Structures are given as C-alpha cells and as structure tokens.
Length: 268
Image (cartoon, rainbow, N blue to C red; front, side, top):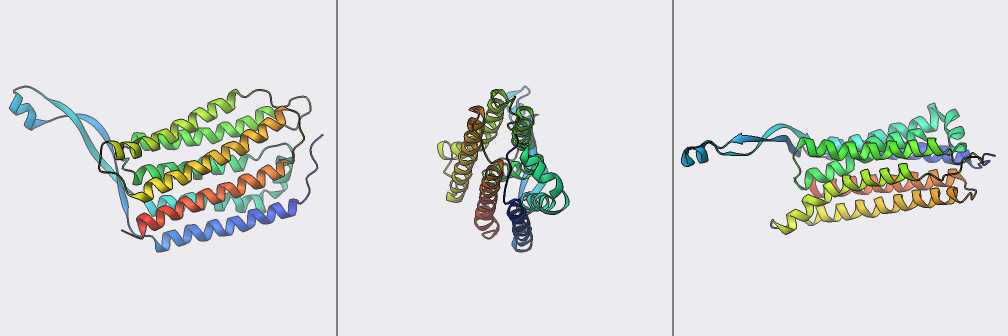
C-alpha cells in the first residue's frame, strides 16, 4: 500500500517559499550583475599560412572561430529562474498532481527542473575555468541533462511503492552515475590542466568546483540511501526524500551561483 504522507500542506509551503527565493535571486543577479561575457566558439583544423610558406608545403594546425559571447549573469539567472518556475508550479498549478506523484514515489517535475537548471551549473563553472569550445560545453550540459532524465526513468521504472516491484534493478542508476561523472570530469579536467600546465587559476574557481563536488556527492548519497532502503523493502516516507532533495538542490544552486557572481561578475 502507498505510504500515507502527512504534512502535505507544509511541503507545498516549502515549494512556494523556494519559488519566491529563487525568483528574487535570479532578479538580483540580473540587476546587479555586470556585462561580463565569455567567448564561445568552435575548434577546427586550419592551414597555418606562415608555417606553410616557410616549410614549402601545407601545414595544418588547430584553429578557433569565435561564434558568440555568453553572458555569465544570464546563465546563472536562467538556472535560478527555471527552479523558481517549477517550484511555483508544484505549489499552485499542479498541486493536485504533486501529492499523488509523491505517493507513487516520483516527482517528474523535480527531475525536469534539475535537468535544465542543475545542468547549467557545471557549464558555468567550465566557462570561467577557460572552456570555450561549444561542443564541449554542449556535451557537459547534455550529459547533465541525461543524468536527471535517467533519474526520472529510474523512479518510473521501479515504482518503489508497489509491493510487487521493489527496487532491484540498479542498471539505470549505474548509467546515471556514469553520465554524471563524465560531465563533472569534463569540468575538472581544465581546472587541473590550469595548475599542471599553466600558471594556476584564480582561487574562486577551485573553491566553486569543490563546493559543487561536495553537493554532488551529498545528493548522490541521498539517492543511493533512498534506493537502497527501497531495494531492501523498507518503508520510506518519500515526502522526506523530496524535502531533503529540494533543500540540498536549493543550497547547491544558490551557493554556487553566488560564489560565481561575487568572484566574477562583481570583480569585472
């Protein structure tokens, strides 16, 4: 039988409160942020005319073509605005669906929120760490997006509150962990390279990346612990998982966004 949750009104209030805070944060970053932008372009193989002339034959070398400048303030504000919109929907427009979703052990809008908003955070960190390739930035975003869609599918596929189908199949979670890990490795790699082969990076980049990784591990542990309990057939109030995930996500997005805002936008 589904778990009979209590305190649903309190959970709706949390969603409404977070919608307001997220919205205010997004507005503040847009209003207070500078016009700091980062170039985004594409790498390709081109002919080096000077080397070719000196060598007497065609010399190919890697070239970079700028495509557009990406404003960091808008990226951070979009991340927070998406979460504000989703929490507003959960607390008002789809609240009649929200509680039945939780009783079935799933919240599709939570995963869709993070598929967009949380996938923008590693992209923003990669931007300030010197990643300018549009293909790499898209790969980071898409891998993050796919990770959260896999989490949604894991909830739907296992239907943890069905007494005939406890969570026993972890294959989707393993793929989820692989895609998420790959996305963050693509962010970590240029940071490490900056220290190994360059003159180092600003301290705020390492601090922001460390903050993000701490929250990634914390959220991952929360998911694993929840799935492990269900796989063992232990009863669990999914509403508690929902609130914990909600607050951890809020802390992660807000802290990372403001770390980048203060370090980059206010100093430019």
